[in-house]
Amino acid sequence: MRKHTYCPNPYILAEIMPYGYVYPCSCGWIRGYSFGNIFEQSFDEIWNGEKAQEFRQKLFDNDFSLCPGCQNLEILQEADTKNAKLVSPSPERILLGLDEFCDVKCIFCRGENYKINTNLIPEDKKDKLIDILSPWLTGAKYVKTNAVGEVFASKISRDLIKQIAKNFPHIKFEIITNGIQCTKENIEELNISNKISMMTVSLHAIKEKTYNKLVKGGNFKKVLVNLEYLSELKKNGRIERFELHFTVTSINYKEIPDMIKYARKIGAKIRFLGLDCSRDLEKLYNKINIQDKRHPKYNSLVKIAHTKEFLNAKDIIEQGYDYFVGLERISFNEKIKRFFNG
Image 1 (cartoon, rainbow, N blue to C red):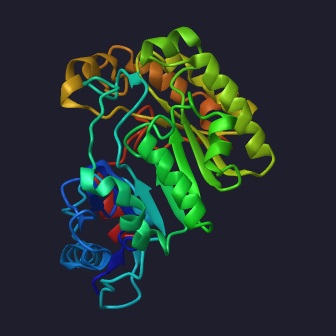
Image 2 (image 1 turned 45 degrees about the horizontal axis):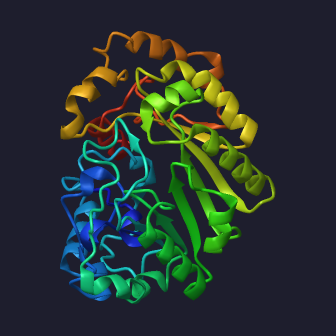
């Protein structure tokens, strides 16, 4: 009998991105398939509309053509029915990425002026954002922001967080930040110090000299001060989950062991990530992408990835076989094959 599956994401997660487009997953390869646009359609038209139901049906039929790069097949579950459930009451988790404004430029992130004001929200909608988002937020448990910019540098993101915290007190926040403006004063001003489900700080170096090579316009010392504050919040139970994100390049890979020690010191988990290639950054990408087996320093990275300190640090590291290529990758097609063949 044919095995039917379902992925929980299209039923519980909505990513609301620049220009108001809604996606069923936070993964980049799904960008070509939007359920709809919050500035043009109602909640019901988007969340349980034709495109949403088509997406859910495809996954139930084991058709992954709309998400060919997915590496999260471990979240797939075998359906206990022959008929697909195509509608969902409301998403439990909202990812907000309505403003791409950032106060720094990580050299592997953006090819354009990093402080550009992208003006992604229609002028006549800016003062109505909380009303437009209310149907999405009513049943939500978590809101993650900012998926595409710096949350503490974005007035749009800050204002939204304050309004959500006030109008939807049951919601907890998942914050991703570069850490520079993630101060005690800013967190308290947003009134979220007791509403943080997860705090993720992108810290791509443990040495200031390396940090300055990777993060243009940053402030390494200030980030470390703010991380100490976040560490205290975590110790006091005010933050449920605390993570550092470290994007591995040929510039910073030697600092991996020290990052492990630092993460342990402040009580954070750490996630080592690979590079995403932007067409604007292709030349630089090829130069610093040490996770490419053709890179001259690749074997040096592999040695670090196979040290006992790295492999045994399960308490603080989410190594992510599919993100950290120093460990052997399993292809999407191979994962599909293994899943359906048991």
